[in-house]
Length: 444
Image 1 (cartoon, rainbow, N blue to C red):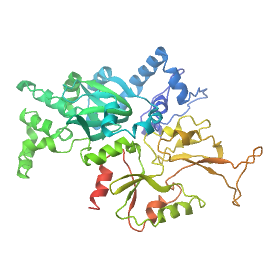
Image 2 (image 1 turned 180 degrees about the vertical axis):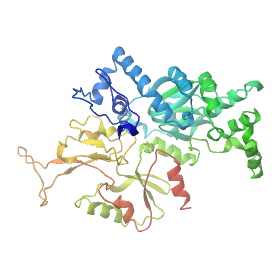
Image 3 (image 1 turned 90 degrees about the vertical axis):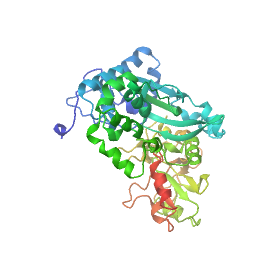
Image 4 (image 1 turned 45 degrees about the vertical axis):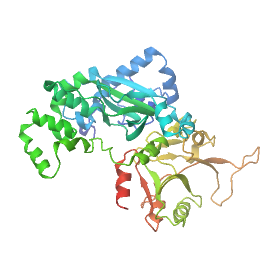
């Protein structure tokens, strides 16, 4: 099995798993002990404390840059065709920067109630509209808001998550039109939503090491047009004529969707999703209120597969015809995992579901308090005969954390969605904008 996979050997003093631990993300590699080995495990909280030491922080960054940065850059479709020599120069020039707080849930309840304009103004600016781009920005972890000046304030145009890039169109056009002495400025601003960790590749490195190896189909339309005009893609110049015959003129190409696939949803819905931080949800429960008859079959189905105890209530944020229900969203950034003293809450590596392992949950309530969406509840624990467990000393009911587990042990999937007789409920990924928009389009 090892021969079929890319492998690397680690020796005494070397780290692994630090990226996954720091950013509460699934591990991207399996570690196997070749011989008898003694390991020191440092929890996420310990890593944060150690990072305050400059020496340790520098060691951590050097280790990431050497072992994992090339791997992560290769995962970006834009960079997958780079020769090894170019990738090495990109790795050397790339800067790692973070914005906002990793514990973004601490201020979430306050900021979500702010007017949209104030919330946008409160977010750390990563790149400003109207400025000449100096770097290609790649989101490594967290989320970012794209916004444009609209009167005296800004309005949201899209949101970006892990793997998305910013500044590609402007940098590409500037590099390809250098002979014409035309310089494009950023059409949108980029802001950190809560927390953002990003990679910055300097413009000159992008132009010299990346752009020559990018396929025209991976570039924004305006840059692809310039590539044809410059003669660097003459073999495919007929594609331009085909597009014009289909009614798409060069002047229209700036209005086409960008490669990030983010320019879809109406502004109001985008701002609502980002303001409530619902873009963190990988399996959010969304109900179309135009179809929902309030029969509660979804709640009854949930109860039937969880010993009579439903894992959600049919309530939550609403925006026009949509209700975003208070059920665990299996978040991209599961801050509920912060501080669990026993490790009882964790993401399943195969299914991606954030689960609570009831036998080692001590009922401290830390995860329930950390969940910014209030989607974890402390519930009484019962034995097989339906009798509640009680504390011997206080005689109070013993409670443990419960949450939606997506019916992960049911072959048919989430019972709530399967039981809806009106096709009004869906479990959907909100970390990308396309799935929700496609679902809405099918109903219009």
